Amino acid sequence: MLSSIVFYALDKAIRSYRRMAQATIDRAGLDITIDQWLVLRVLLEHDDLTQHEIAERVFKDQASVARILALLTRRGLLSAIPLPHDGRRTQLRVTEQGHRILDAVHPIILQNRAKALAGISEEELTLMRPLLDRIALNCAPAP
Image 1: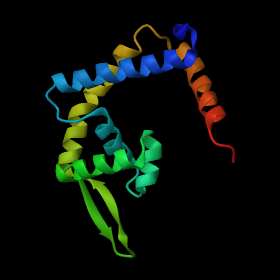
Image 2 (image 1 turned 45 degrees about the vertical axis):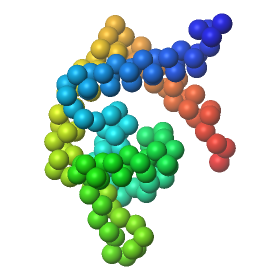
Image 3 (image 1 turned 90 degrees about the vertical axis):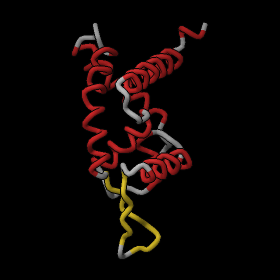
C-alpha cells in the first residue's frame, strides 16, 4: 500500500505544504510563487552563485531556474550586473522591489510554517532533521 511507503508520505507532506503555502500567498494578493520566492531568498543570501548552483539549492532543473530568473528580472525583482572580468556572466542582485516583496511574504511564510508544524514538538523536530539529512546523504552521488 502506497501510504506505508515513507517516501510517498514525504512527498504528500511536501506537496500539501506547497499547495497550502501558495494558496496563502495568493490570498494575500502577492504576485509571487514559492519557487520564485526560493530563488530570491537564495540570491539574497548568496549573490555570487551560478545558475547551476542556484538550481541545486532550490532543487530545480537549470531550465526552470533560467525561466524563473528571466521572469524575476523582467518584473524588476532582480537585476543582472555584468561582471567586468567575465563578459559571459552577470551578478544577480535582489532589487529594492524584490526586497519589498520578500518583506511582504516573510510573515506569510512564518504563518505557513507554524500551521504546517502545529502539534509537532521541538523534540520531534530535533529527531526528524538528522533523519531527513541522512536520507539526503544516502541518496547523494558517491564522491
